[in-house]
Length: 268
Image (tube, rainbow, N blue to C red; front, top):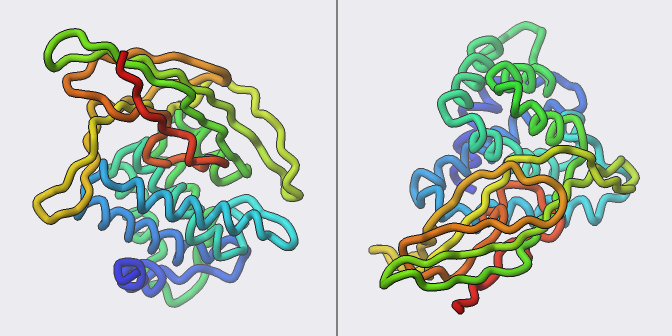
């Protein structure tokens, strides 16, 4: 919370948004994203799941209690969108394009609109244009899904089995299911037709405590795969005793039921 409020000194107080629908994300989404980046720097990228899950739960709760209609993010007009959804969208984009490109887009945006005293002031479409310019064509689907559509995933890990190869090496077979869904403003959902989206698949050792007594996540392997709709099995050789495995295990994507993304590994 402190990081979010301090981030307003950089964003909301330097880049004044215009008075159009969606423009408040310039202040609030960028501040919440900045807070996530600071948390990542302090605790490490592998320990971000609890922070991301908090954002995801807040967004899912908000949309489930929507009294009128849910707008797309670029036209968002609710707190659960510009705080919770916005933070996830921007953190996910950084994960795809890297912090250097993300910062380049934000820097150029601030250079154009920072500390302006006269219009034009920026709206959500202006910020979106800077992100789009820094995103490779192969990842434009992510921007379109998150900004221009209401997109949810139905990712699920169904089973994970491991067999010992030698004293420290194990072969892990993980079976997952995946489907992307588009929702309209009334909540009606339609399965998307697509070749596959890039999603993290990971295997983890048991959690332990760091030198400060905080719970620490210990990935044995985590890698992005282009996951098509349907059921798939992935096999890994890992150095270390596997305990859990899953799809999108850190909850970077907007998953309708995030609690079934990870399962315990059965040792054969």
